[in-house]
Image (tube, rainbow, N blue to C red; front, side, top):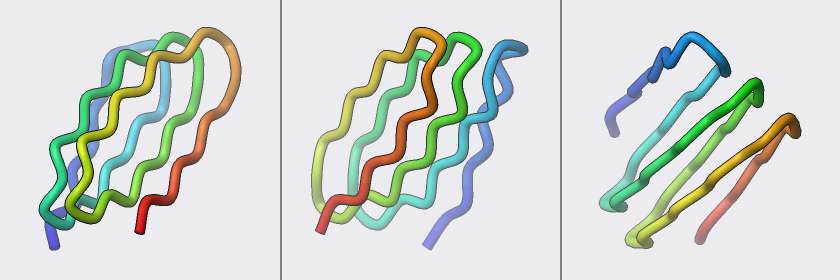
Length: 54
C-alpha cells in the first residue's frame, strides 16, 4: 500500500492506492480515495468528496 499526498494549494487530497489508477482535480475540497483495482476520477468544486471502492 502506498500513501500519496497531493498538494495543489487549493484542497487537501489524499490517496491510499491498492492497485487502482486515481486522478483528482481538487479545488477547495478535501478528497479521500481508497481504491482497489478501480479507475477513479473525481473533480470537486467546493465540496468534500469521499469515495470507497471495493
